[in-house]
Length: 480
Length: 99
Image 1 (cartoon, helix red, strand yellow):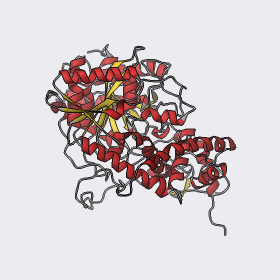
Image 2: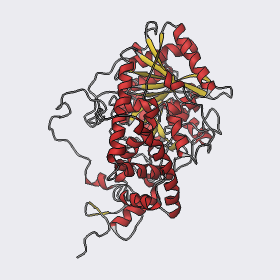
Image 3: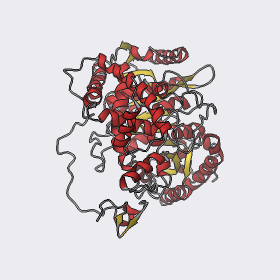
Image 4: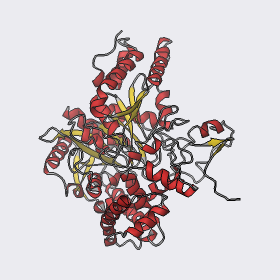
């Protein structure tokens, strides 16, 4: 046996097969993956922390199980990166923030426990925008991530490190989190698959809360099947997260094999209004492809789409202002000593949070403050109901919705950094899925003339991830 | 719309955030710009719309109640490992009450 040479292009099924044929051991894969990741990481800054001991211990468990002829797990020996907003016991978890630079969690997130129980090998923690707030990964306190497809460009955000690691080949699959597009947008920018499951489909126990009514955990992968496999492992009810759903978890990998023929796919006209022309052409070509495969394409309307941005930034910042109150200098490693308790709070937070996090805490505090609550927060919750209703009405007529992920491909590092509103607008097509709580994903569907990846977004009904994977998988098979 | 700097300072107080004068200045511009954009929501008549206070949860009201079985909690030592200051099994903070 020897380490696989194709470390940067491994898939879950290739690892499963290699282990079964004894072409390599899990420890050999883990060692090769760690060496490769540590060597390549300086180019992108995708990882913030490596966990070689934890990775090798997990790989040894897999090899021992295989030697005894036992089931080693669905993800046996699969090298992974975990976004650094998801806690890992004994492994530093920074949330991309100076305020948690030295935080070592005393427990594992449920998703981490489930992955490791199925044999996954966690190589390390992936860089991200501070507390998952950003669309470019430039808000990380530990430096931006570079897009492996074009190093002068952003990888998207906030799960930029998770997307970049999979695109670069320094992880086979990874986990990210999505509150307003933070999985799908970087997946689109980096040319990989990214999945935001239904709200409640995956436990958030151990995810540092940003906006609790919008936060989702989901996988990145280099193909649809691997993403479906990882989701199958992490999905399902968890008693430690009261918002996690009881709905049974489908066999996504089996169901996605069904042909797309006969499916009705909606094309929402509002998602083509402010689109860069090149992106529009690529998306239309992908839709044509699906039509050729037998899908029925219907033009639909999601009339409240243009209000999603305002709605989202009221609700998300309001929830964030409350969720981030816990970083106050008492429990989480950082403390800047003022004289009084109140000065300690203010100094710790003033010194520990970056500009975007402060901006959002301020905005959230403002919209919740006396006299503004009804005008902003209550109004936004009403508009959110209208956006959710749009999806409900559309899904009465179609099985899935296809649209662009972002209005344009990856932009240059620094290009939008001084204009928060322009930055927010890069999420204009992904915010709606989180607001409605429907499952959605990004699948690579081509590139711009400059070679920048473009993503096709697919939305499905609540808990119908299988339909979404079916569209994605059929498209992938026909286009590759 | 522009948020005057005194308002920014008031909100920063509510949020327990120390901001420098430069940050206050910048924040007044940025928040003003974003809040102006948000005013577009007033185009919509929402008088008869119930606010969406819950995303989605289709289960019995008591579905999340679990069996009351004892289990080992995190424990005092682990809970305090990240405390910037602790002692006698507690988090330590600056003195709040004067004798």
